[in-house]
Image (cartoon, rainbow, N blue to C red; front, side, top):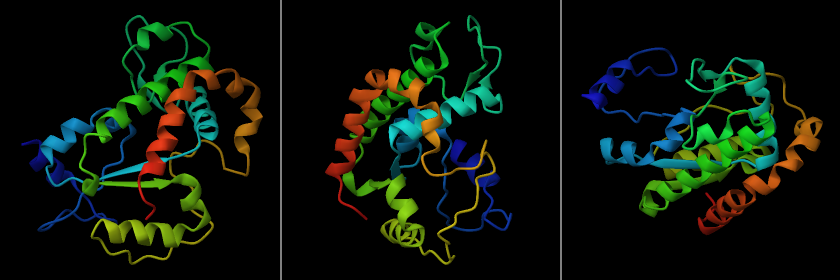
Length: 208
């Protein structure tokens, strides 16, 4: 039933519903905590792990929380301060009254550890790995190569100047994260183990 409901709600890039056999793209961040579920519901699912350097990632997460535009649990019982945003991770109660950099650091580290645990159980032929930096350096080449390994055709031209996401809080620019560097560096010990594991995971998988 769940798969049928997904299919019913699918829309292609032109806004039309699904017809016949299709490959669904699902990239909701919350589902980083649900890999085993999706692997079971969709036995032919392929998983793409996108790694982004932890420092700009933490900066983006802090900006998202502070904006108030990504609240996922605005009435979370027992939570105080900024409304909970993005993924609700196990152990969130331990973060009550913690400063924002600490919250997002634990949020990222816990999610990454769970995600890597789960992806490690996925057969290698169902898993692809790509890094954010590689993609930004050559968007057209990287997305074409990724599509090819997924058994898909890529028929659009991707310029070096990528369009902004519709959920962009503020325009990107080189080393944007450094404006929050003093806060980020204080929480690097929280994410260090998960980040080292993520980098090793990327290194264990051949490039596209």
